[in-house]
Length: 246
Ligand SMILES: *Cc1c(COP(=O)(O)O)cnc(C)c1O
Image (tube, rainbow, N blue to C red):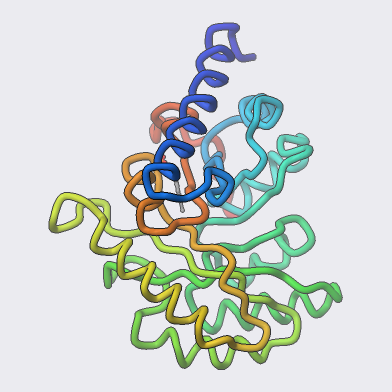
């Protein structure tokens, strides 16, 4: 059970992050409503997530399928929009279809195909973002800048999937000490694809910016920031909530 103190802190953090998002938007000459706030809820209990949703969080993002399913069963997200933002194996796609409004982390043609197939079985259209490996990091998934255009041509033809934009997770320790360079590159790419007008592709969402850099991301046109620790506090990786195999 959350203590009263924990509840007060969480409510305060949500209000503060909202304020910072709005201020960053205004500094960038944008309207606060142009930037959505997704709460990255990984490693937070259903109770904490539910409390956040009751206190102004309208979009939740999970990283792991098993963790999402567990909290889903515990009605953690009631009333909020649920999205998937983590690494996704093709054999787990089926668990997400029908539960999440958006899969943000589509970083390969193979994964896009699997989503298209599973969504087809359920006769729904799944919205996705294409993840771009903007820092060219070997350990990270995502399309390279070079392959994105060609992959988009193919994915645009899929019948049960709609591309709604792009997502990026820039390097944790960028060469210049900040991610402005990568955010600018993403903004250019986003605008570039928008002007090409693919059928079935709508560049509505540019998902970038996390606790340490969301204000810079907003300055570079981000339409959705994904914030975890500034809302929920630092994650304790020694206490994994679920070591399940899924
Ligand atoms: C955890 C996570 C975030 C939020 O990270 P913080 O630095 O805690 O804000 C954002 N996006 C993804 C994909 C994540 O896994």
